[in-house]
Image 1: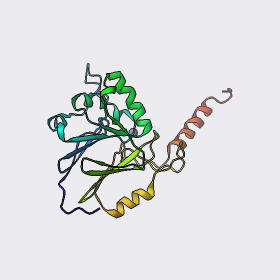
Image 2: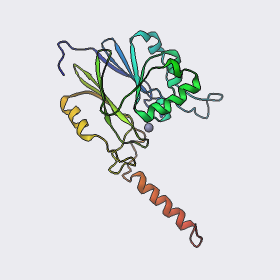
Image 3: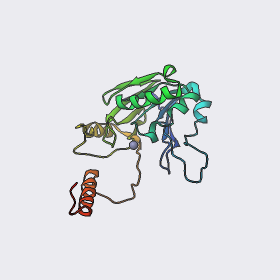
Image 4: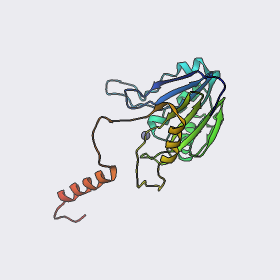
Length: 228
Ligand SMILES: [Zn+2]
């Protein structure tokens, strides 16, 4: 992608860094504010009387006319759970895949704002121009189907957000992560890669299915002599 001038690019988090939950990241390209995810966090034990914790969106409220949209990576609560609260403060279009928007729809109905919200259905092959920024997506694997990574093209290279992901050779829905597309984005040049990770410091190579098998074996051992 070639642009005649160098765009001013800023990337920062409004939540989700150094904590588990309330994921929300901002990619600013010149005047366009592009938001990734709007999650919630469940309160700690010492937050008495608090039901949920959401990101501080005062920056978005102050700059509401520049916010082009909220892009959702997947349908987990820590990525969409704060959306209805955020939309009540800043009513902007929301972009997400079929399953993600299906989950969002219920939340918006519950909050009474479904009719006032613009939802844009995207899939891993969608390419959009939002504001003056090109946005594309790539399929990832995660513990919830229909997860995508997001790629914002800028004159300085792509800003890529992977969301939560794993590489799963045998995904339950049969749709593998689009590694070829990721490689192509890499070849074009990435200015900034944002990647969600929980417990990345823990060395564990076993996959979830192996863990399930071990769990079942443990249960069966305990139940020796009894029929299940
Ligand atoms: Zn997740």
